[in-house]
Length: 73
Image 1: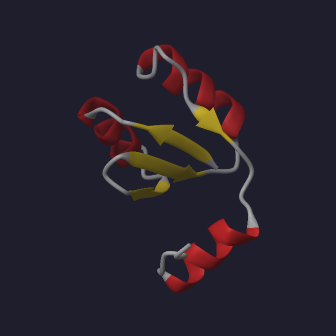
Image 2: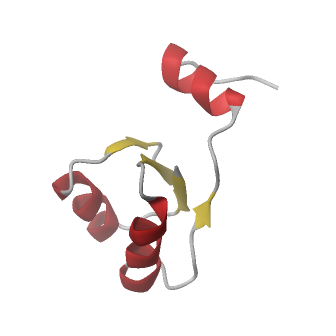
């Protein structure tokens, strides 16, 4: 999973054109993919000059993906 804060419209178009499974939360984009390394390098090089956040999925991520709900603090 790759999480990108403040994604640009250009990045959104790139992700959509590659038909990755993703969630667009407005202020951040979460891309689910198997080969994160190559995609992360491409996104960082071409779209996120300030860098992107890449992290492994957590149980919270799995819950939100399966239920479509947000956790409330």
